[in-house]
Length: 424
Image 1 (cartoon, helix red, strand yellow):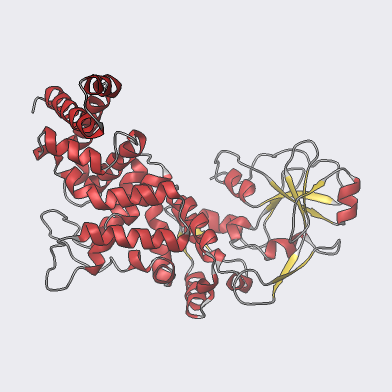
Image 2 (cartoon, rainbow, N blue to C red):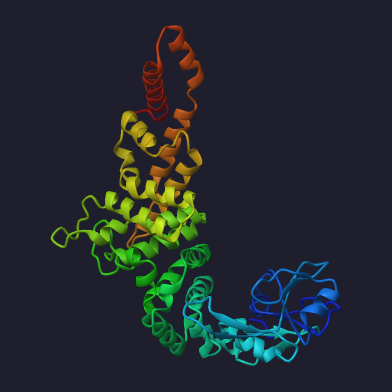
């Protein structure tokens, strides 16, 4: 880690004094590539910003776009909680608010640093120390006023996988959960933070942090219920269903899977938490239960359709995809049909990737084993797609056949193509 970040740019000629704040300063100190820059302006009024040509974009507090760079500039402000949840806040933004006042309202010390025009870092709350020690720590007790901050901290844990949560911050988060603050979160915001955390390098850390503070049981009780549920050790050396789910997520990250695929990985085994105790460690019929639970989660959190639909396919068919090496051409074509693979080949490729992550997301030697099922099913689909459906339809129609006959002929042609291509 570097001692000071390089100067990001000169402060534009604006009213008051402008500082780069937040993530840009943090990432520069960590030597990470620069992303978007956020600025705080101290000692200016909204009218002065407008007079200087800045464009207003903030609804709840004064935020402006630079007329040339389009960077965001927010007036320094303080916040005071006025109601439960995360919407009830009173905002004060006036020239007398200091930079330290503004930084004090931020969530974590590593995000509560600023940089002036000369490149000097202003760090009143120990952010550089916590970066060095790899600690996620709240800046002030005001952290407890906004339950979204629990999700944000968990997301940062997924981004910086080796960082730990300060004990006092974890205690504060547990208190927030116990007070019901997390229950006030709206589905859209929960999904937004979960989606961002899923796409980080260490997504399992997000769920571990949420589980440790009790928030996972409130936000995703279906996932939280997987811990402590056993599986057969020959198929799952890791045994615990919750641990398996985390290993699958990490395997998906290693495979550079997209968001829909990672979401499907998280949802694919939810039904195992509802297996009757007398059946354990087997999980007969868990696929259908997983489909129902994944759909309920998607509806509750208003998950985008592409993520929800892929999760349902993977939950229903991952067992059959794993077993496809035993299938002949007819069974392979039926599997393709249930997955709607001919019409949705890109989604089927995502399903195969999720199943490879499911295979690799186990203990023992499983992470190092090949997964030929993915190649086999992709080859079967390619063979089916190569069949000229239009030509078959015309031929059957010329012979007087109707829709049923066309469908049967197309089915037979695709099955024959798969058999030839795969030698089965």
